[in-house]
Amino acid sequence: MHARRRLIAGAAAAALTATVARALFAAPAERVIRVTAHRFLFEPNELTLTKGVPVAIELTSTDVMMGFSVPDFDVRSDIVPGQVTRLRFTPDKTGNFVFLCDVFCGSGHSGMSGVMRVIA
Image (cartoon, rainbow, N blue to C red; front, side, top):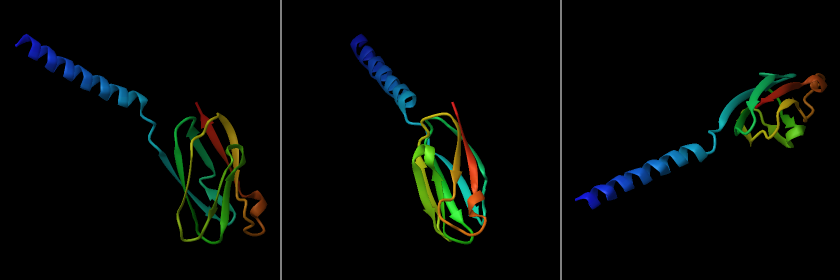
């Protein structure tokens, strides 16, 4: 009877250890941020991300073809009107980084940018 109790207690302890290990070592959940591009601005034009936390930026355009580029992270995507584009990456450094439209979208294109703040 004592051996059986020890066996059950050992199995319960192993299951608890496995559950705790999965929780501690699981990758952080992906954060979804919606960004809408209009001539000649992004809404929002300031994004705050956390280093090491995966992000999916959902990009939409209300009018013309545009681009979304974050040169410091070497990520970019086209933004097609009427479609949602998901740009996924994990920030690996902290600081303030510029994102910009890299597809000519008209006379105000050169000022179409924003700031991505990555915190620890």
